Image: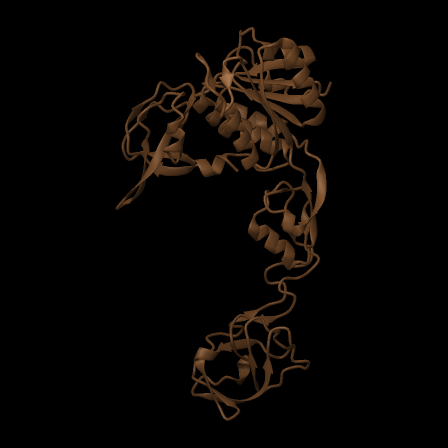
Length: 419
């Protein structure tokens, strides 16, 4: 069996520092997604599967950056007005068809090709045209080459303009179009099956029986997976029956890239999910020195990776954002799986025991001196509204022991960990 989660992911003893866990993710997680070629218009949000190398210069010819007049710089006087005949008009898409001559000015428009012989464009605001001649004041063109876009100024033939593993944005699609690409090779979205288990779990919209709760985490996890570009299959709620769970996982593993759940799988807990995964493959627990979050269950059903997140709603969201999202990004072919944070002054004080990373829900507050970050009033992992009413997470490193008002802290907007 090909084991995806091996080596550093199996940590039955002491908890692993987060920095070590992140390094392990960067080194061990490799793309498993298949590749496909799609029309350019269908590629935004996809992960690039091969480098894009330019076969075309951008711009493909010298062209004007302004509406104005193309001239030879040497024809311009420095001690008085320059008057030149306007001998032609050049619009975008309509080349002059000849070399420019000394002693002439060419009326030119933005994007129009500049003919050989001209080396400077004077803006129309600095010119006066009348009766077939144009007059330029001294200094109308401050330097040779003004408003002159050179061939290949942006992109040259042979340049690698986009690297494999990049999640494509609108600007990336535009730059591909600029070199004439009509289709590109990307990674196909991962197919991920998500399920919950438990006789006490009730699906939204169903009558809530005594002692039961509505399924929260399945919906949160499915939404997060879709936000990072995965195709999600909802397996629903599986009953507390080992046979049903085992058959459900086996069938899903045959047609999906990854299996996902939350809750019900914990170190030392004799539950049916853990037993079913172990029966069909293997399971272990990745113990990381973080809060919130209990050990994350990692394993394989056959050769299909299995990921089990903690059960508390906030812990589910936070551990997905900070731990599972980098895994899924790496499996999807994305090269940059790191988490970006921003240094923001704290508007709170805090004592921290140290020894583990901690993520506190927080919101930004505007002040006359710029934004500051404030903590949500509770740290309970079951208070899901705290994720709704805040803007992101403050990451408190394992070596921190005290934070004072004004100290710079690492703030991670939710937008950085949900795409």
